[in-house]
Image (tube, rainbow, N blue to C red; front, side, top):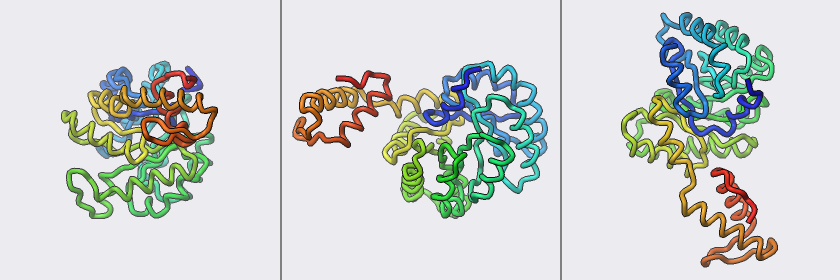
Length: 285
């Protein structure tokens, strides 16, 4: 098993949920092309099936770990009757990519997980007013590798009712993006699109997150994975522009220069390099 798999949490675009009490769906998820698979012990598992879900993960883990896929587990929230049993399970899963922590609200929770699960990588779900209020402190915790927006639970917690474009949640997404940047984390992960067969809605939701600086998205169906990857990928025009920017920069020996009437300076060059890196294109002109 590659030791690099857990590092993929920081660069992943697609995070596909699969209910942990449905081992019959594990193979399909693992072969979906998603960057990260989330074995879910929380919302998608009925309370009476929680123990069964843990047993399924434990029984299948050896086979799962042999796959070249990064896998994380969403545990139940602190204070849940399942909390301790979930942590005990996670401690017995060698090669786990990390955990998705729901209702991330307090640094004390992250400190506790750090003590009980040494070296574990945590994806912190911001899905409550308390989580938003403590966003900067959560992002600054050493075991947090990425922030994740759980906008549906956030709406339930706050009573916010969103229009179709979810503009009411713009402050949340902006704050999560800025906290990620301020803490030096990888760009954050946006919440799910519940319309599993609406490719247009999925693309619009993903592109909205991309405009806010997000670089990943939660998925609830395998058919959403390709659409998420396509939306996050730079367009052909973006790649062409990035190549021309680097060529112009090289010709000017690093001095600011104009290209098609636009000023090209260091921030533009850095963005061009990021664009080409996303498609695996050489950054050398």
